[in-house]
Image (cartoon, rainbow, N blue to C red; front, side, top):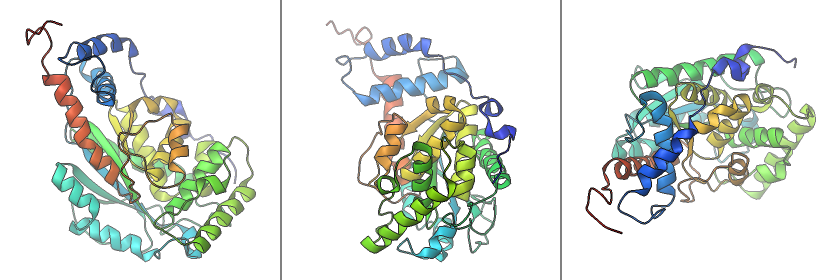
Length: 360
């Protein structure tokens, strides 16, 4: 596969702004004067500070935080690697789960409904397309399924370019409706294999350290999964591989569109709520393309998938929650939204020592 110099693969194309960290002094003062010991709200204080920095770029106001129309966008795609039986389910289940999302029966539906979070579903290329005229459903198909990346590149560089653009388009559309926090979820049989291969390629970590049990496979399936990722790494054998080429070699249609969605969200100066293993690997790819995107990322949870802690370490990320989740769908991101609301509430409404006439 030949490399390309398409502008979309460069940081300059995305033009992501730098956050004005000089305002942190004022933000910290705003937090410290609340009626509590300094630092007593722990990581909730750091979350509030990050949100204030991000939102202040848009409003030029650093004394208020608003969580407006948070939305989870779930991207679904199928993977050629799945033909080797490295999941508990066949590829047909991807389409069945998309139907489940659309009829409101999945875990992410329940969480979004109970927490007042918007939900959008995107077909990026599933083996069996699901017909629907739901306003919350988009088809941005790059194909029926990626190629088996153990044998050949998962997709072409042209598909990577299209995927980044399509992901950016749907994120921008949701931001234009007023959302200022976007979370991303995924569905795709075989996509933990793709994420593990990406993580190995981008970090030089052996497949034995990045490949995990996914949806709960047995020891023989795990052995096969590791061998397939190792075979792909041997086939590619590129040191310091560019992120767009890594996506082409071992990525997924859903993963590439998530990367584009993250970059567009950062370019718009809005908060990105990062879900579990697969989404965190997409986040790693995004910051390899444009390091400035990291400033806008809030990491929701630490998943039970083996490679997730490695991905979080690479991202220098400390997630908000650790609930042993390994479902995907954006469920961890949804569960973190109440913490964003709580951070905004104390930042905006908690009394100061002066206003409460408390002398310390």
